[in-house]
Length: 130
Length: 404
Image (tube, rainbow over all chains, first blue to last red; front, side):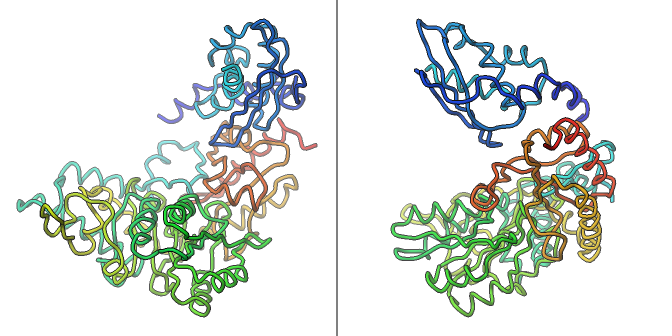
């Protein structure tokens, strides 16, 4: 039944816990990146979330990263957290990352339509590395 | 009134009827009865079961013809929905009626399904131009701009929505037709009636239009069934079938084929028989309640909604204030909070609203200057406590995202 399905997801106060709200209101690594070697932009067509990732790759490692764009709290917080997570990781590691790792550091279970918001930044970064 | 899904989910506050309405028990039972006791293909068998299915299917057509005040049931073409109906005109009518130097006209408030078919038709045909009528600052169709564009371009077609799915604005169709008659009498008028048919009485002859398209699932009927109404002479004299198959031919030879009469010539393939019969039940359901009661219920809710909305200075309404020129469809934004987050918080309060661009990107970007909104929309089953639950959810939005 509909309500059983609904309650599999995190509650509102889990989804909008302080860490996520903080990253939304004060996103880390937000803005342009002067020494960027790779950039990409992706949009979430259903809602208009739009993320641009700039990154600097040195010796197959992410030596610097930033993002720009607009979106919902989940999208922006997830992008902000991603930039912190992947710094100094190898491009191979990033290319092999899946939504599971985002779910781990977001710490919440989202419904399918919100997963698209949370996933957008990682997909954009992987696009930039292609 | 018995809506089984709402009865089973008493905590659900469903405010997304503009996307699709729930289905009354009569409609659900009718479809079940068809598949359990009456299932057969139409217009084929000589056996009783098929004769009966054909009779039910054609009775649905008659009842829908009466519902929109068509001259005859031959003017009712069953389609899969509004989009399919508009695309039928976008191919079949455009094909034989629009040529080099012609113009197609639509408006800034259209759903993509009444915008892209004309934009692309203009691109498909060589040297056909595509023009768009603007809106006023009050989110209504700019009738001066309409008159100027009709006069200047003498368009072959003006395609306009009866009621905006994003703003809730009801367009003054009779006034539009009067302007057209005065300045560009040969222009045909197509109405997207998807949001109108369950909210206001539609009389295609009184409106004076040429095409009227609508869907079953937004008027308490099933998905996958819709209607194109057009004047019989237009369907007979100026349109050829664009979808070929069984059931739409008179005779087939190797060198060419000839077409069945109306309405079969536009209904190639086995139609959605159960859908049409279910839609007939939805029509009976609406007619039993009556449009005067539907409207008084809706306007009571609209007044109640605005009374509550007035105390929230941080919520922006994109549309008309309370008036007879609107229905219960409201696009709202809260500065600093993305519509997805608002909808998520409302969802956690068991309040279902739509968040996004509502398939009206031109309106969103060029008129409202927003990426997305949340949309609240009412149906026949909406109650004041649904509106209370909405505003209770909004309190949670402001708790998590305090206005700066």
